[in-house]
Length: 275
Ligand code: SAM
Image (cartoon, rainbow, N blue to C red; front, top):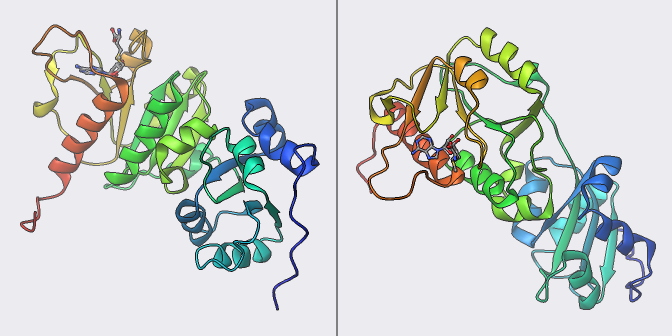
């Protein structure tokens, strides 16, 4: 028998509403170890992948909806708290005029260096001081699409668990591993990596179509403004460039990562004939 639901929340002063709203701020995400994900599909995927749900805010009256019911069951398994509420409060929490019908608060997960596997098919992406949450979310989405294992965040990066990064990842945040390292830690890690570390930089002499992508791999991308510093380039086994034919001097970071990841995939997996 599912537990009876509490009364719908109608006041913006409610402590649970305030706590969920505070998850827009990095300080509170750090303090609580939680983050927000929006939408029934994404929350259901997270629950099916075993992510722990602490709270489920949803539109009061929709508890019988076929997409909401399994989420409430998953929440009960996780001993989380259901929070039925009026639409304007979902808007306040998501800071959107047309909020999704559900918002979940999930527990963050961080990998340790030992969790970064180096099997022959493993590909990881390392991002040096990535600043833009939209870029980071897009890179998580592309990593997921191309079968990369996850992302190593080097130095002072934007938070992958921010609402903006999670939104841009379209749920991929739940399917890619995330680790953080200082620049020094990454250089030591790269030195002991059994496969190739492939950097990307504009003045690099090697065309990305001529590089080698077999074996365990780390694809290292530079910062949006500063590019990849010399010290990190020196930690690489090869540094590649994508040709720039027009007047722009560089690609957007997420686009460059996507081009490189699909080249990795093309080298590792024969194309299927079914289109
Ligand atoms: N002004 C920066 C610079 O000089 O490197 C531009 C940085 S770019 C916006 C961000 C990152 O995307 C770069 O550090 C590099 O990792 C990657 N990138 C962008 N365009 C690239 C290209 N044509 N070839 C290789 N890497 C590229």
